[in-house]
Length: 86
Image (cartoon, rainbow, N blue to C red; front, side, top):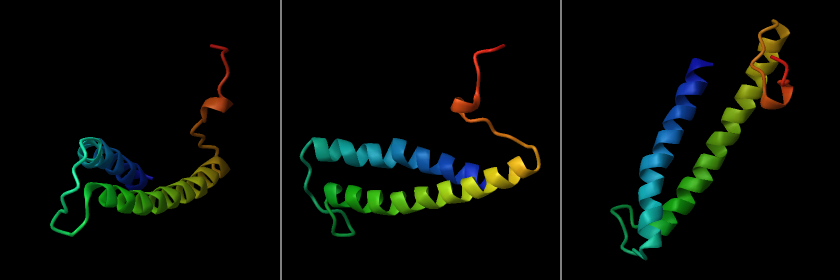
């Protein structure tokens, strides 16, 4: 669970810094290729494809962990499982 949390946090930071930078370049119309031969738009597309796979893997792993934890009566409640009763 700790590794899953760390990987999600790292992905969040990657998006806030690197992907935000690439998006800014795309919005400014930058089409210069980087050292890997890709434009900022092409880099964004590659990041999106790879990140979608990683996120799907994270969700699959979390679903399995959540099921195991619930089996041991350890519940990480989802918003829809909460009530307004205090």
